[in-house]
Image (cartoon, rainbow, N blue to C red; front, side, top):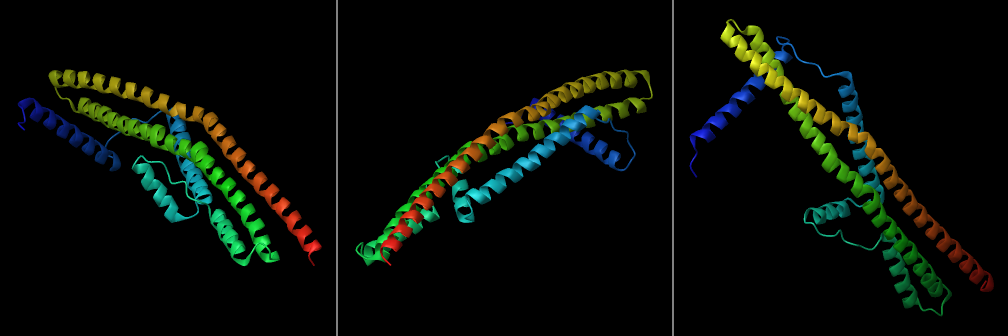
Amino acid sequence: MSITKMDLKKLAGQAGQYLTRAVQYTEEKLGNAERTEFDGHYETLVKQSDAAKLWTEKLVAGAQSVVIPNPGNRVEDLLFEKLEKRRPNRLSNMEHLGLDMVQAGNEFGQGTAYGAALLKVGGAEQRVGLAERDFVGSAVTDFMEPLQKFLDTEIKTIARERRLLDNKRLDLDAAKGRLRKARNLDSQQAAEADLRICQAEFDRQTEITKLLLEGVRSTQNTHLKHLQAFVAAQAAYHQTAHLAMMELKTELDRKLCSNP
């Protein structure tokens, strides 16, 4: 693959730009160069965006540890997502317990009090375990995945545009420095032209970044709906579990009373 003169010129230009930015950044850190400060509105938007990123990450991680407490299962789910396959619909621990109870009940015999009770309890545990699995699926689909998508799309896009804005700001301040150092009319005119271009690019990138940052606040309404879905799924699970256990307890108490 041949490299044309145009390619070499482009590469040289990019290398020169990176060097100029590095020099400007270093000079600013050393206190030897002035820097353009972002306006207060932009800084406020940045703080709000950073807070949204931080707390959304914490919410996703916290929900994940509650919904999928087994770290091995979390890793397995992540691998399935990377391979663009559906996450495994594995049995819950409660369902496994219910199955063991049913098998034990069959082994001891339905005709025995203990065997019959194990069958009853095992069936109830399986129903509760299934409800738990439904809750996990809803929590992942309706709460965790949308919030993670927000982190993977909007937040990553904002981070990229903020880095680009920082680079445009370095270019602008470097251009201001060249204008201050210009010693003759030709170099001054060239520096002024360069400064106008850098200022326009900086202003344009500032507006683009601000628009993206302002969009973060509007996502809270969407996230509120996801939170409501999470609560509804959790409430449905606990209601199912409560009813199943109360019915089971009533039935077992009645059997114990009739078979002292």
